[in-house]
Length: 331
Image (cartoon, rainbow, N blue to C red):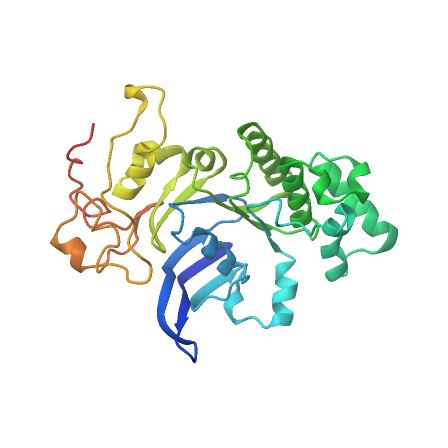
């Protein structure tokens, strides 16, 4: 049984207008996501900006309330939990946010930021709380002398380490890393990624690693889920990403990665135009207006995410059971 089992998860944000503020339209941020995350693995989640990655991560942890669907976490449906039950569950699941500058309270000292969860969940107090915070600072590569400092006294990489320590304080087992390295310099990114991998190995953590950078995702993940316009369009093993990915959108993302030379690239799939609006998504496959391989069926029928062993694809042309023709125009 998967550690986290997501079924038909949807999230719509109302667009209100008029004197009474009635909802005239809805932004379909998540349009029916099915995804399994196994204990101890890192599931990478990639896609263009605005595709719904961060919204999905926050719906899983119920920082945002989903519109419908289920999220089974360690055998319990989070979407049906009361506030009191959810507080206890949140001890097991935490988030590392994208911006290390805005995610920390500038009026709180580092010791209080990291120790706040210990107080809320009544895990430690007094000298025991301080000792635990010191231990956490050491585990993320920070000095104990930082305990009484404020966030503005640290660099971006150091602040992200503080954010990681805060997530680990309550002994969480599942962590959503929401663009956790995208705001950092490349050299600092490598340090934070290595820290996350070391912590996963030593503590047995499970990650949902959200990013738009396929190279980072490929480095840290066991499997990669590709998201487009609120839907998962492909799930593939990270080590086989370049060899086995067949969905046109995934191939377009891979082709966009800068290569050392012409021979180092992948088959080029060039998408046309801009992503459709999540307010009024296209019929059928959401990619069909931009896909060079789309046919009449793509425009009329939404493809299901179909798995062949561990590889899942939502595509009429290239998914399991399809003819999988050669991608015309590929270089």
